[in-house]
Amino acid sequence: MALPKKPPLFFTIGTAVLLIGGGAIAYWGLSWQRFFAESLPMGVKAIPETATFTVSLSTDPDQWRQLRQFGTPETQTDFDQQLAKWRDRWFTQYGLSFEDHLEPWVGDEVTIALLPTPLTEGESDDVLVPREHHQIVLLPIADREAAQAVMADFSGSGLDPADSTATDTATDGADDGTEASPTAEYRGVTLTRYDPSGDGDEANAEVEPEAVWMGVLGSELVLVADDMGAAEQAIDAYKGGRTIADLPGYGRAFDQTEVGNPFGKLYVSVPAATQFLAQASQPAIPPAVLSGFQASRGLVATVDLASQGIQIQSVSWLLPDSDRTYAVSEPLPEQLPDYLPQETVMMASGSSFEQFWTDLKERRTWSALTALDPDALALTLQSGTGLVIENDLIPWLGGEFALALVSPPVVDAPDASPPEVSLPNPGLILMAQVSDRPKADQTFAQLDEVVQSRYRFTINTTQVEDTMLTEWASPFGSLTLSRGWLKESVTFLTVGNGVVDMIAPTPKRPLATDPLFQLVMAGAPDANNGHFYLNLGELDDSNRNLFLPNLPLETQGVLQAIQAIGVTATILDERQLRYDLFLALRRGNRPGALPTVAAPESTPEPAESTPTEDPTSE
Image 1 (cartoon, helix red, strand yellow):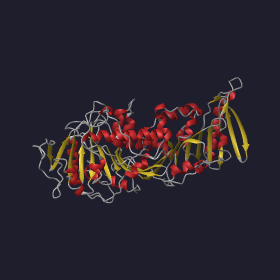
Image 2 (tube, helix red, strand yellow):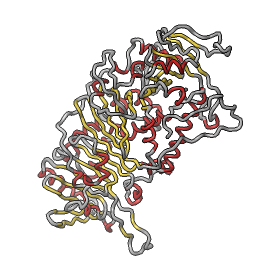
Image 3 (cartoon, rainbow, N blue to C red):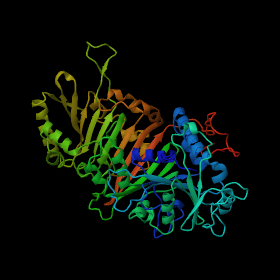
Image 4 (tube, rainbow, N blue to C red):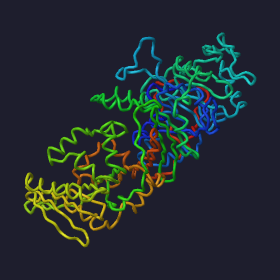
């Protein structure tokens, strides 16, 4: 039950979920004046408001088995190995097993929190100065009698049927004559220190396990901490101090998530997470990007296990006194997926280009973490085409817009090349709903003149059924761009030979009808402010698309387990932003018992009580 200095698997799962989507987890709240609804994790009562990250995970063995069913046989084996190492390293080291020592009394979920070391007097909270963090685990007591029976084996635990904050300490030895564990008392709570026994897989341990402190808070929670100071912070919060539930906007954000029987729940302090990224990033994140996130207070989310993947609902919110707000407009059901092809590998869309551009320039949303520099992008467009975004594009880009990368047709190499050679063919589609077609036509006429006079492109117009296409062909025919109208208010620009045939005059297989696209977007609101879609199955052919980089070899195994990712953003009000994320995962073999990690010969003999399976085993 000890906590590693490096984040354990629980933190790895939560962090991965957060980066792909953005992710993190929510509680269902009603009133937060020191009142906690039954559906909230009990551990929230003892988490100080300064926490950087918290994750609550289900103790239901069925849900863990369901999670372990996802993936390829290779990723399933790797995941089970990591779970087994975590079990052996942080349970067995202290003579504990989930089945014997936790399962009889623990509640439906356990909560893990990452707490920064408090600032000393006169110390500044510099975003570039690393803060040391410690971890606590909060285990809710669902069965007091069972907990009392189990903890009777642990001297000084402090759990008493009449008064669970007993002050007696055991320092002279236990009843059997053995030396008792050292204890300390803080605000009426007895804390017992447990040292690693030396059992377990020390050869595979990346860090030497250290002592942990354990105590009981009231009759509700068992506290485990890897540092006495962290334990004292949790006790202060439980004894009437400010908790994360007291943060402005925290409870209101929970109301925007739907909670059924979630596998996990997360909270992330956005300023603290930004600080962590600033310390870890190479090269350093620009100060302008960091300042844009200081207005955000937090992000919460729930994670549910679905039959075909993992579904996440999250909400981030701004500080009440922040001068930054989200532009609230009436979101409309998207239409552009009806005009994009099923060969789409990646798609990003928005409900308003003007709002997207404003948010990007002012670093208002998570797009600020992308590599896009809006000033450099605008300058490049102006120097290359003479167009000014604010004057020549925004006035007529008044509706939905989308950028899509597609698997383009194979283009044969010139006759002089070997017959097995094919040329890389970029596959890019820009599409938008237009609010002022005359202004759009004026801009396109200006572009025609630029590409013909400055870049020596050949311009041809053709009629395909009811669609008029304008084709820009580069010298020697090495690159082709096409533009046109799919209907009165939907215009497009394609890059790549043969790409225009995928959508004009109409797509033969629209993206909106693709079962995989429908799966990852099914839980999102019909009226929203934009999508991100990534089809990793189609990504296997990325070598044919110049805009898609080759992925690192070390990520190939994990990516093969993921079929697709879908993210939908919805502005709830001027201070709340919702994200719906779905990971479509492949299903692997039926999981069995977790593997046994063999200990080296030099490892001391195991303790008298042998480790048992944890809740993730079959």
